[in-house]
Length: 309
Image (cartoon, rainbow, N blue to C red):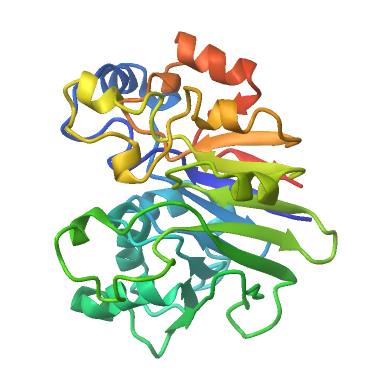
């Protein structure tokens, strides 16, 4: 049985963002936990005992403490059910949480060579002692079975695939430690329980919905998809920034080329937006944008949402 827990549903900065007074952040502060979201990550397990994270957000410590499935087992002085972390990119909101996992518990970091090169180039990640924390490269279109902490098989298969995106913003104008050519900076993942055949997709950063991507996810039981912005230029219009969603590597929810329209003709049982920016009006339950997304079959999840396949 494949279990997935949404640890965080927001984009970088979370909701509310510490220095933001936009409508979404004001509403989140006023309404408490109902509208608040931490930064995007999910945990999944095939047996309910050993868990793997997809990305490690800066809010990871808070997310682990808020998720009973990821607490140390009763009676253990030091223990974690987390056996590994799979990184889909090298943005701050995907890797900074690794620094909260430095207490010498064994787990494996799975990432493309381009992402591992970025971690290796920054000495702060050396706090993850390689005697305990292994770094394993993963290849595009090369399925692998993540192992639990004692090396036993997990019974799960992870298939990384390339999606349209970009390298981390903090590398703009700088040499990429992993080289400037080839894919690997932005990955999607297909996670399959080999015993049941059940699977889900995780695509939290995507600059364009291509025909190849549509063909990949058509017929899926569950898809987590990039929901950063509602309109491509919403941050500019709101006075919150000078970049479009696409220039940051994120397709909009709405519009002719947006995720809702481009994926509307696919047979997907459950569609869930993830990595939702505080500027996105779809976060607000009473907004016309939220109603339009839900009418199109999309879910805006709360932190802690659990889905069983």
